[in-house]
Image (cartoon, rainbow, N blue to C red; front, top):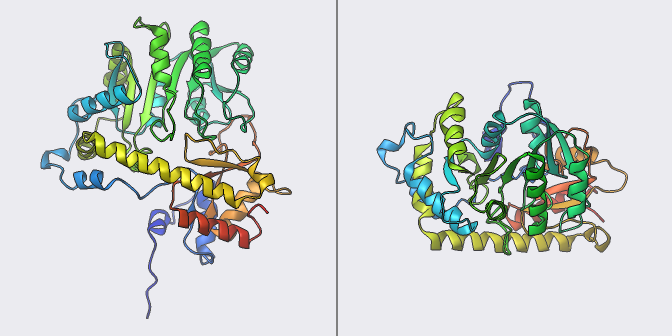
Length: 411
């Protein structure tokens, strides 16, 4: 009797509990239940990554000391990692060497840190650039109303200053402005003038500022540092509005499940965030992961070599996928250099929802809308499908071949 091998992905999703409200899980379950005719599911939707973690980082994890398996006493994080991160962020994001800002380790993912930041803000409208990551999913349940700066996603520079000002002027109760300079999902690396416009609008209207640097460090060209621009704009003076910067290291170093990142703010607000707000729901944990990241991050040469390799690989995969598209589709495909995604137009005759469902159920290829989660307010669909470039090139080729066989690859 032959026992069928269970794939790693099946181990992650093989559960009978219901209901599961994630649409991808519903489609994935249908595909698996049908026998996975096209092969192992290929996840190209939310940025799933369960491999390619740096070997040096994994080696450090195997060497963690016995005392690391418990809570971290300081809510700022493991001191060794906090200081290493502070130096690394200061150098890479070009922040001033002064006391106008401080950093703490974020141990529950940047999404959680964003929500904690929102706890102390006045309620009103949150303004982001559309299409956008799921900021509405974080802030709308807290009482914020989402609004967006619309622009043509095919324009690599992002919206103009005039479009930012017009979108803000249409909002009566602006309370929060989100800046995502390495833009998810278009992959655009925003010009400093766009970042400055968003900062100026927030300060003039008394709105808080959230700087989301999820993909800083993954850009194969000089990356715009929104925090550098913000701190230069403040000139060392206390900010007239609350602000928070979050930077994910899980995406940069392929260890999303570790939940490690940095939260950056002025010293007093950061003190309140990490010592008053965050302990209301969780204490600082994962010392073993923090210890391993601190040890690996201290080898700047190895870290730089890893990121250079990742940037080159992503550039190669981006070029390859574009070359597989017919010229008419390629011209409308959005492929910025600053995030590992492509946005392709949905095929004629199919809505985005229909295309995503068929790709998943018939081919085992999970893609996403440009708005990657369901809570997008009244923004609606962009007509684009988002494809994650993280897996190996051979996996992307497999996805293309499956979709082609089902008549779902652009022709």
